[in-house]
Length: 99
Image (cartoon, rainbow, N blue to C red; front, side):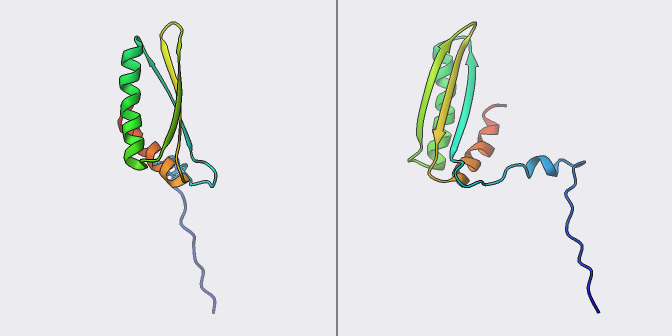
């Protein structure tokens, strides 16, 4: 006699599929951030929050950023973690900063 085993299905209606979109991929250690503000000082203060969070995840995180002045100030940053899991943790935790 054989057993029929049903695999669990993803429920898109309850939003589970969206959260499952975060998959740890080997070689995916860089998180990119874009911030916008009316002044350079406000932009740097906002980025400091992200950098502090990144250093809490991994104190050896490497970062680089550039600030452009257009209609408003724009900051584009890259944070490089040692492993993909740290990047994923940072991405998930940083959602609370952007709210």
